[in-house]
Length: 384
Image (cartoon, rainbow, N blue to C red; front, side, top):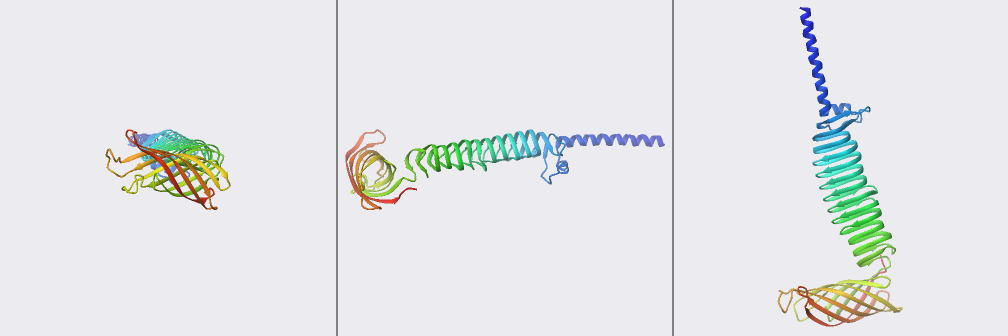
């Protein structure tokens, strides 16, 4: 009887040992929540709900070489991680970190992060790709998103987004966005967007509006270019620096009968943007034009300047299109101007020139005539 009981006990112990071995293997493969929490010396954290190939390092950290789950979670990732909702690596990522909603690396990330909504990393050396946003404290590589990229320290590499890129500095790289690029410190490289801003620009800006505080070298290319110094080159319709003189012009004439314009004078050149009304005549229905003019001026006396310019006018007649009254026209015009500065603020000027107005759709001449204009100028400031 004792021998029989002993054999039964031995069999039970063998079964128990086998069960514990299988359980240990399953825990090692599935990286369960309870196991991760018990083995983590740095405090409580969300567990890994998934499966993978992982182990514990001598310092009791959880290291995964492959990790797939609903909420993929590990301390260190050396391999690939895919989370249906989130993919998180707390200490270091070397490999591929993919989350359908979010992918996060709390410290260092070397490799690729891909997410449907957002990627975040403390130190990123590699590539971030998301549909909404990428965030990194330090970035050395590429950030690519449909909406926004941001880096809270000077970065090296490329930021590409559909809307906005923001960096606390660009040591060397490119910011390319559909709407806005912002560099709040030194920018060494190229910014290309509708609106570009940099604190100190050692490079180039390409956009509709380009703004920088200091521009030691490089070029701004856009419709409106602004900087607080005069060192860097500017290529655009309106170029503004601290030496730019800005005047408000109000005048009447034989082309557009009443006009308001802003004139931006630099060292020897100037540009003007403005609008005028009643292009077709005072006895006709309302018509108007918006225009841009660029020219050169010469100071012949302390208060007297002579200038010449050419301009492009877009004309709206607000009429239904017909053979005699087109809906819109364009006009190329040239002028010679004489300006007299009456006092520091008020000036007067007269202009004469010639305008050639044509149809848009076949460029045939609508009319051509001489231009006579006169008005006043108001000095707004001495530069920004």
